[in-house]
Length: 168
Image (cartoon, rainbow, N blue to C red; front, side, top):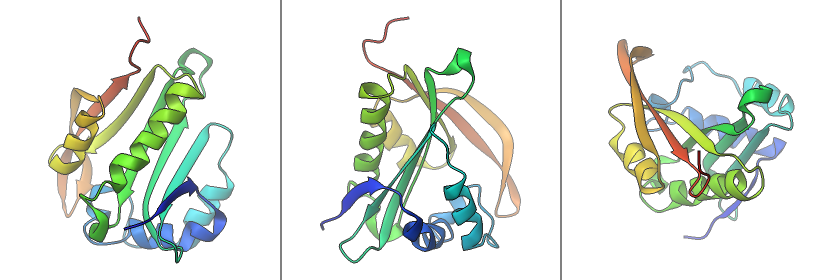
């Protein structure tokens, strides 16, 4: 399977929205089933210099994964970034998520000089947790009953990765 990872474009928003609403992906996001493409377009157009988003796309333009990194805007936290990631159900466990996250970590480490990259993940999303741990993230805490998912309250884990060799 061949795909390209590149910065997100406006024309990706329809595929981005379809991906976010896909069964098997949607349950692990904080989106709503009623989310419209225009909301994604508005979010894309509102991105600033601290927002870095990438997509994994097939040759025909199908969006099969997306990942974003937002640098904290506070002057005292400019060394911190927050990531989000999701992958099309038919392309999970095929290295797409790893490639997208490595793209974000390269940007964070080698271009933005971030020291800390953090994320939140549903506590029962074992595949995602294993991916994050494989790339150096560690669980720092649990937010109990922090989100609604499928009519129930769900826990999230707080995970972070400190840049190797960053000191502290």
